[in-house]
Length: 398
Ligand SMILES: Cc1cc2nc3c(=O)[nH]c(=O)nc-3n(C[C@H](O)[C@H](O)[C@H](O)COP(=O)(O)OP(=O)(O)OC[C@H]3O[C@@H](n4cnc5c(N)ncnc54)[C@H](O)[C@@H]3O)c2cc1C
Image (cartoon, rainbow, N blue to C red; front, side, top):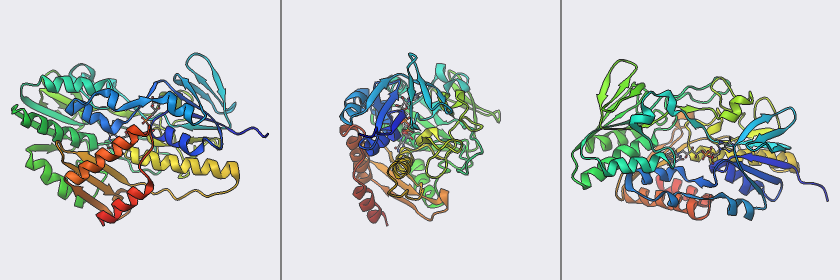
């Protein structure tokens, strides 16, 4: 029997599992990840702002990988030798591949903002999110400042260059912190800052016209064109010399390209993997990427990561089987922002990519949808609701 082509997947997040689900019957797959669990990152805000246990937002990778007939290696990929088609993994094992998928996500560079690790809080992973919840539980009142640091991007691919990688969680922090503290009758003020000229620069004016008044309604102030310089015990400072008083600073750090891409010399100027619209690395046809690790993914959203993984899988399938075709790259911003209690705002927009859709849905139905998407992903160990759900949603929004 002919040997199946070897695929090594670096990362068991949104894109890595999607590739596994698509290609496990076709290829001999090894999935590498330094974590033992896959993290449903969109649920982290609930850990940080409602006290949901972290065990409810992550699931073991081993059973999922095993069930799909693949091998799991627990360890970080340290170096890729594209000429030899090998990956060296922590512990020293060297894996050879016919195809490599780099789906490691991006790194969050906490060290780039002085004082952030010491005085600031974040929602970006399963260590920082429970720490923020503990601080919020003990919060006795005062000003809260939240926003994203600006990130740098390379120039090899024509993706939109947003100053903030992903601002949806900042909206959730503002709304949900207000909801939590108002419920407990704790006096507070909340200020959101954005490095961009407008908060949520990745969507169009019709969405700003909905979200702006919702923020004002709960007394959230928004400061734009604010690039963070450092975090102190009682303030957040900006490069323009201004400062905001803060008793609780919740910051999304700058995003950086994955270390394994950078040290292997595969990254663009900012260390992200430059790929074409079929998700193939520009400099090597055997390497694909998807999700936050790629230069094309902008903003850094799970919805885009999954779309990109679908395209990468289709391109690999087409090459291996000589049949099928790769759908066009059609990114869109799709996210559901929890607003505390049973309220949420769903955002669907493609204006960043030249489209005309800027749609929102507000209220408990949006909240129910967010809950359903996240729960589906958690309980099915990384699967998403069937495509039909998304199409039905678009009919509702039209
Ligand atoms: C708080 C928060 C809320 C969010 N909310 C939303 C939302 O509502 N909707 C939405 O669409 N998106 C949301 N996002 C963004 C979304 O979570 C990311 O875009 C998505 O997780 C990216 O998927 P990925 O597969 O590229 O990377 P990840 O999900 O980050 O997975 C990468 C995997 O690679 C592994 N890895 C890292 N380094 C290595 C290495 N060297 N070798 C091997 N493996 C490695 C990691 O351990 C991880 O398991 C949110 C993000 C955050 C932080």
